[in-house]
Each structure stands twice: as structure tokens, then as C-alpha cells.
Length: 269
Image (tube, rainbow, N blue to C red; front, side):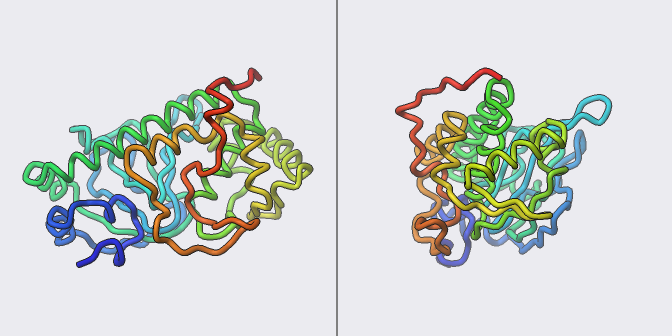
């Protein structure tokens, strides 16, 4: 089986053929409706998902129902990072943000395969490292970037993982993902609309000018995406996708983001 033609998920596509064949015997299709919980906080992780479409959020929760997104996974990655690292659970919840589909493997099967096929674990660990870089920069953006920069970064990351410029997102959902009050999200969306980078309608945000959105996101976007490419290659290679603003839509993982010129400094609030 040629996994590069059968699957869209980049992790599955880059596995060595023999190791992929061993894993493929345990994979099965899974539908990912929006809102589906894949990992409950502090409970054993029973399945690992390799998304082909849609995207998944990892959310941390505190007292008084305080919640904020800490991680983002689409067709470039996989769920179950704690399992890769040798544990069986996480204090965070993982759920489907935008509906899609993917491949799924039982946790116990994957753990056994990682013992007999070390190349699998090597690739998975590379993804885990890229994912940790992403979460570190999410913390940096949350602590040092303005709301509109954080929102621009989040929309870019969502656009990266979609096949179209229309993102099915609500103000309420964005307020949870960014950890800010809904009026703050509404104001930031209005500012981005004023810059003609997006169009916001009830339940849908359309990306109009990705390049300008990257300028607004500034250094909060681009470095984790570049690090992903260094560790795992370009997940868009060989993919056909519809055009948007004169550029291909779908996951770019930071293509074109001028992080080298801007460095890592983010603006204070």
C-alpha cells in the first residue's frame, strides 16, 4: 500500500513503508464530528487519532470553568502525545474543533508497535517535539501579544489546516480558545475586518488576505511552523488545494512568515 496516496495525514505518509504496513493493519476510519471528545482529562487515552481533515484542540481547564486552548492538531499530526511520551493520560481535554475524518488506532496496539518498530516511535517523538514548540509559543503569545495578534495567529493556524478559506467558528468558541472575554474577541474581529484581512459572519470567518494577517500576527506565528518543517518535512508537498488570495489554501505550516527578520520579540499588551 502506498500511504502517500491513500492518506492525507502527514505522519502516516512519512513513515517507513514496512513500519507503516505494521501500523496499517490496526488502523480504522473514524468520523470526527465537531465537539466530539477524543481524550477526557485525567482518564486513560484509549485511542490515537491521525486526522485527515478538520482539526482538533487541546484545552486546559482551571477553577471556575476557566478554559484555554493549549494545542492544535490537524492533518499534520496526531493525538495521544502523552502515550508517545510513555504515559496513558493527560490533565487536558482533547476534542474536535472542526468536523473531519481520520484514521484511528487503539492505544494498546500502538504501544506494542512502538516497542517492535522503533522507527514509528522516532517519527512520533519528532511530532511530539514540534507540538511542544507550538504549545510554548502559544504561551508566549498569550502572555505577550495583543489580542488581535493572538487572534490573527489562531486564524492562520486554523486556515493552515483547512482546505478552504471559510472557517466555521463562533465568537464564543474563539473566546474560549484565546482565554479572553467574548467582547474582546468581537472587537479584535472588527479590527481585522477593518484591515480587510477577514470577513466575519454568523458562525463563519472567511480569510481574505493571508499575507496581511501574517503581518498582524507578527512574530507570534511562523517559528513553530518552521520547526515542524525542519523536524518532519513539508506536509503540503503533493497536495492539491483550492486557491485563496492567489496562493494555495490548506496547511502551509508557516510558509511565507518572516520570522527570521522579526526575531522572537512580541509586543507587550
